[in-house]
Length: 259
Ligand code: ZN
Image: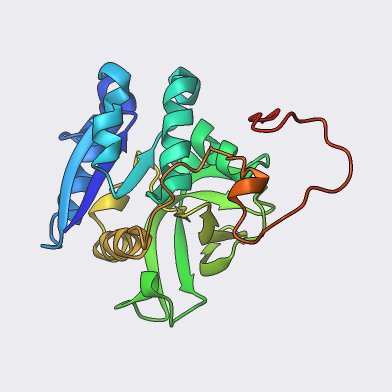
């Protein structure tokens, strides 16, 4: 069983009548419902408004894959929680970053780049092309699928070159975008998926739901890195082979060092 936590900012649904009409149950609950169609996933939700944004050390320790949707409240996410999530990703937890999550603190931190992009809100059609039909995240899809209304996201997208490219989106207005990208960070897998603007029912689309189920299965940990932030010193006497120290050192014997 893969344990999934669906994180939602949950602000537009409270403030906007338009978004509430599309997602009366909340975007995070709609995303979670789509994932629950996979009997191999145990899915819970967490939101910005909960203590620790719902991401306590206990919740994260019991999370194999975290999905992240945020937009207007990125700055309200506590830096300590961002560090906590980053450490879990480096330790092996999968992270699926959705749509406007491209500007979330956690995604920018893991990418180390601007994560900026072009955009236009015109309800235009998007054709999402599968550019790697052999990839686990594209399983069960045709060569492309269409979304009748989506916000345009366009290149250039300020990300490091993805380790794997799964989707490229084409928009009615002519732009293209790297809509599905994979990276590894430490022991964790990261997938960015562009569809998901809050004023259209994107997360009710069967193809989008299939992609998210595939992505969660792909991002599940394949192993773990117990203490990814530690940089342990290995004293000379503990080396695997007998070793005689040579040359000067600023460290006293047994000293942990500057790290
Ligand atoms: Zn949007």
